[in-house]
Each structure stands twice: as structure tokens, then as C-alpha cells.
Length: 168
Length: 363
Image (cartoon, rainbow over all chains, first blue to last red; front, side, top):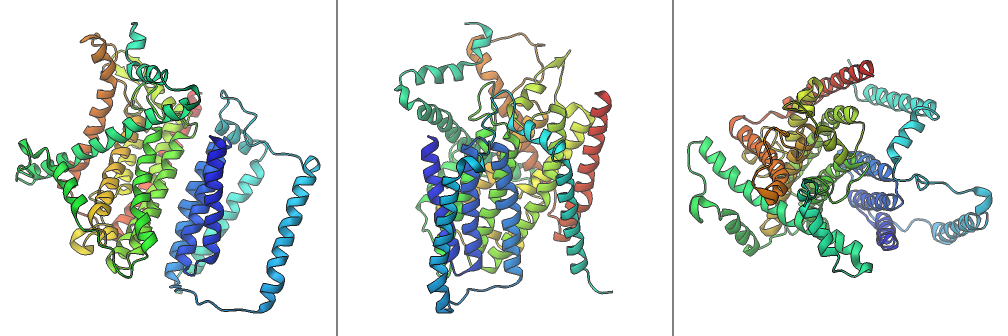
């Protein structure tokens, strides 16, 4: 069951990413990015991270993608025209990307012991909920990073207000 | 049969049916047996709600409403369904074909996904998720995307304006909606819809422990209902559709079965929100009288009674929606935004602070 879900949504995720790259209209690209985010959420779900999955859908495909779409529409971006660009991109770019991917895959697979594995809530039994554990960590061990992040977001909001304010 | 097993008759009969399925196929069989009744019952509720809405609106506006198809017009939804199915499906030539096709599907999918976490009786829920309530809000954000896809792919200014209004409104009112229900999460200490309902199914004398009867719960309920009305694009917040100025908003360019799907998704969302309000503030399937009235009518009646209570509460909310739609005029756009951000949001936050103070001092 889990394998079937992983296969379906993994393929959907990769397909969405490819469509995202090859689409010429920015809004279609944004919509295919939503497909990627949603499939990722389902994969998180099958790994037992319910909270992460729900947060992924709410934050990424809900808030951030809608923001993307609004920005694209307000900036009035039309369909992109296809340029051939420099031939250097084709000669060096594609083999370069393939090389980096191969290198990373090799390191991750070969040095698995040295890197260590992360537990995605798998060690919790049914009695402790994933959310309770997550909030405990968030408000004890990771309190400082959590609060610093909220201040960062607050600064960003203030910046947006300053930029958007009309000149007196 | 003991009284404990009697009200589990639906759950037990599902287990009995599963006994005839091969062991390897049981997970899939169980999923099908849980999902199919939901997919049958809720469209039926949708059909009933459309008649109720048209008859109710008619009566409030001093006319009869549909009264030609069947006795009192109760077969009207079937006639409407056949009409939608047999009409020609028109897609604008300039429309983005793929997105135009996917939008109504995604919308209906999102509307029905939300039913997965709604317990309509004891042990009667498709999945009891730890993050059940969060799942409901996540699915709600899928609705926004579907609405935007519909409006944008139609390449029509009415559709686009309607979609922009809808998305802006839904994002603005999602914030007070979530904040209003946080009060319930704080009081019950769980995000699971089943736990929230179980918390409320106890009684002091004749008073059930519904969150509605606590001060913060009452304030949260009012805020929740107002935000939920806007979230499901119902009057007086129906600016995205606004038939008198935008023709029909984001689904202007849809016809035939696709239009029917938009219609269905709107009602499905309305029913979902009514269900969630019932679960959060009105104790789900629990009876308002507790053990005050003795068990009557034999085991079958006692088995069906909790489900009936749930459906009754949901229909009370649906009637409230219809009543509000018939009586209140539509908001202006700036009033809508001002109301959401400057009134509902601070009030919801104030409610959270008050609740956390009370809960902290009571230990």
C-alpha cells in the first residue's frame, strides 16, 4: 500500500517538476509547482508525518503559491518567448547537472553510516502523538531558533509595509 | 446484545461484511466500505439542501419555490441533474483546456476529501487523524487553488475578477476561521476530531459539556460561523459570484456537468463547514439531553439516533445559512476586507488570549 502510494505520488512529483521546467506560461509553472508540493505532502503522510503533511499543504500550496500567482498576475507577466540562449548552457550545463546529481547520489548512498539517518516520527508509537512531540521540541529545545524566525518574518512584513506605503 | 454494542451496529456490520473478503484484500475492502457510504450520503444531503434552499428562499420571499416536479417539488434535484448531464459542454476557444478541465475536478475532490475526518457517530469516521482539524484546513486551501484555476483558465474578465475576489476573500477569512477554532483545540488539547467530540460527550445534570456553553466557546462559535460563511462564499459574503455584477464569477465560462460540479462543491463546502461547526461546538453526534430520556424504540432506533442527532444539527446550520442568505444584503468589497481584518481577526486573537488565561489559571 505504502509502496504503491509512493510510486504514484513520486512519479506525479517528478512529472510536475518537469512540467514546471518546460512550461512557458508563469502561471502554468506555478500550478505545476503546486502539484509537486501536494505530492510531497502525500509522501510525508505515508511516512507518518501527518502534521508536516498538513502544514506543507497549508503553507506551501495554500499561502505561498497563491502569493506567487498574485505576484505573477500583478506584474502582468505574459507568455515567455523561447530563446536559444548560448550554446554553452547546452554543452556544459546538462552534463554538469548530471555530474553533480551523480556525485551527490554516490555520496549519500556510499557514506550512509557516516551521515546518519533521520527519524521522521517513526520511533513514536500510537500513544504519543507526533504533534505533541513536535510542539514539545519546538517550545523547549528549539525555542530560540523558532522565536528568531518569527522576528525575521516580522521584519519582512515591516519591509513590505515600508515599500508599499505611498509617499506623503 | 448489550447497549454498548447496539449503537455500534454500522461499525459491526462493516466488520461482518469484511469477514467475507480475502485477508489480503481487507485493507482495500475496509477503505471501500468506509468511503462508499460517505460518497452516497453526502451527495444525497446536497440534493436535499438544494431543494431546502430553493423552497426556503421562496417562502421567505413570499413565493412558492419549485413545486412542479413531484409532490412539493421534491424531485427537482433529479430533474436538475438530468438537465445538467444532457446539456452541451461548452469550452471557450481561448481557454487553457487542461486547467479548465481540471479545476472543477479538483474543487469537488477537495470538497469531498474533507469528509474523511468528520466523525458522524461513535467510531464512525473514515480516518481518525492526529492532525484531523489541520487536515480540514489544508483541504480548504485546495479549494482556493481550484477556484483560481477556474477563473484564470477561462480567459474571461468576469471569471478572473470573480476568482481574484474569491481567493482574496478566502485567504483573508481563513485566518479568523483557524484562530476561532484554536480555542477549541486549546480547551480539548487535541487536533483529532474524534477526541474533540469525545471531550464534549459528558453531562452535568442535563447540561452537555459542549464548548458552545463556555464563554470562549460561544465567542469562538460566533466568529467561526461568520468566517465560515465567508469561506464558503455564501451570502452576505457572496461577492465572488455576485450574479448582478459579475454574471457568475469564477464559473461564468462553465456549462453542463462542469457547472453542476461547481454548484455541488459549493454546497459540499457548506455542508462540511456545518459539520465542523457541529463537531467543534455542538458535541458532534452526542444527544443534547444525555441520559435524561430513557432508551426507547428498541436497539435499531438507539443505533440510528446519534446519526440522526448529527444530521439534525447539521440541518439547523444549513437552515441558518439559507435564512441569512434570504435576509441580508451583500457586502461591499472594502467593507468585506475591513470586517475580516479589522474586526474578526483582533476579536479572534483576544478570544485566544482570554481562553489561555482562563485555562492557565484553572490549571
